[in-house]
Image 1 (cartoon, rainbow, N blue to C red):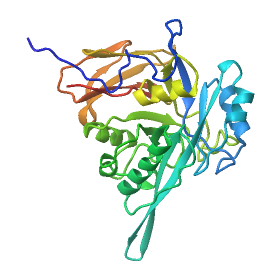
Image 2: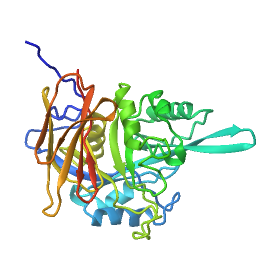
Image 3: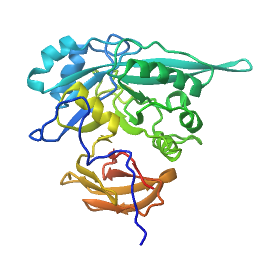
Image 4: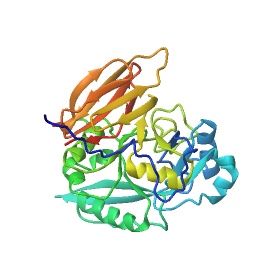
Length: 337
C-alpha cells in the first residue's frame, strides 16, 4: 500500500506562537489587517492618527504603517487607539529602492519596493545593478533588522520578473493583490500576473506567502478610481492574541489568508487534504479552485466546505475562492510530497 504524506508550508493545525505565552483558555481568533499604508510622513494624504482612525472605524483589528524609507512612530497611536487590545498599530517601513537601466539613449527606472513589518531601526535602500540584485541586497539588510519581509507590487513599473523573484531568498510574503490602481496586478502584454509570479516562486521551491493589501495613499479620495484608497485588499490572521508578536509570528508561519472581499470561516490542512470553508453572503455564489505546481487548476468546487485530497504529485496545493462579484480570497500553499 502506498502511503501519501504531505509536508506543509503552513502547519495550520500546529498553532502555537513562539515567544508568546499561550494558554489553553486562549481561543484562536481571526484578525483582519492591512500591511501596506502611507501617511503624510511620506506620500499619503492624511496624518497617522487619521489613517489609523479610518481602519479602526472600519472594524479592522490591526494596521502596519509603511511610509517610504521612514518609520512612523506607533507608540502614541497605540496609546490612543489600542484600548483593551481592540486595535493594534504595528511599526513598518517601505524600503523604496530602484534599478536604473540604460539601453542606448533610453533610461528606465524599475521600482523595487519591500515592506519591513515590525523589526527595529530604519533600513536604507541598498541599491544595485539588477532587479534580483537589489531585491537580495535589500532583503539581506532587512533580515538584520528583524520583522517580516514583504515583496510589494512586483508588476509596478514591470520591475520584477519570475526569474528575478526565483533568484532571491529570505522574504516571507509577496503581494498577489495590491489596491493601488497603477500596479498591474493582472499582468498583460505577455507579462504574468502577480499571482502567477507567486506560483513561479512556489514552483521553484520557495516558502513564501500571499498577501493582499491596500497600499493606501488617498484616504481623502475613497471614490476616485485612480487614487490609492483604503479598503481594497487585506489579510486575515489566525492567532490567539492581538499583539505584535502574535501577529508577526502568524505571518511567519503562514497562518492567514488574503482577500479582496471573500470571507473564509475556516482553513484546515492535514497530511491528506486541504479543506476550505467559506462564510457565505446570501446574495453571492462561489467558485473554489484548488491550484498546484505551475498554477495548474487541479479541482473546481462550487459548494462549501470544499476539500481537495492530495494525490502526492501536485508539488503544492493552494485554494483560491472567487465570488460572483469578482472578489477573491487566497489561502496559503501546502507543499505536497
